[in-house]
Image 1: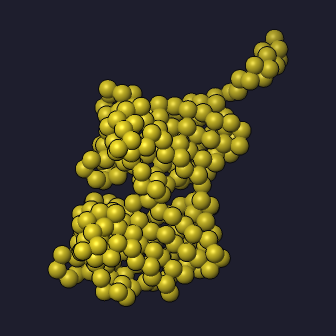
Image 2: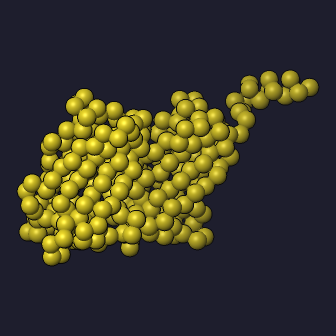
Image 3: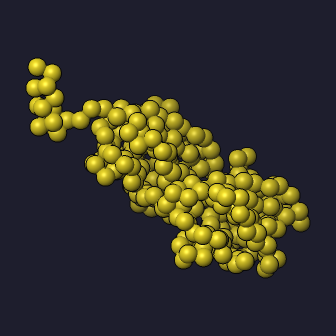
Length: 254
């Protein structure tokens, strides 16, 4: 009888439940949270599954928080991509989401590299953010904020593109310090996972989306083997989304 039920379930396309662990990091910006429903779609080489992470009307997402979920869904096999989407118009900003499952045990990290807000209101954001794995390498980025007047920033909207000797590029979401701001003289550390194999990092491009200007002295990038490349602020300029305050983008090469 058990064998018959198993064969029937296979014929109907029913698979045994798989456990997924989903972690979501919201941006630290004040307007990043939402009370709207947020759903996740997990895409693998064996199919897709979808789940609501937060029901509309319940306790919502707050800015600068990490939310963790344990879901029981069908088995998608190897996890390849993730989509987040919203059912409401209350704009929501997240920086990354990670997923692992009982069948694909390595945690996969996906970054909001286009830095898009989720919202059904097209004037505020997009209804869906799609993210794919960039690779399987990890890097650590260190930033050293300068000590000159007004060097720190509470909202510069910093993101980076790393370029390596192998010709690849790694894209980040917003890089936000744990305390929310870049403080004068402080060193901040950012972990980048599931990035391409760049080989030796040759260049880094900094981009500012927001207008609270930031002045840094040094950017350092370290790979899994501890090899580090250091980039100095050779332009001696502030970084800001407002071109009247500083450079909106800055490319530095070793």
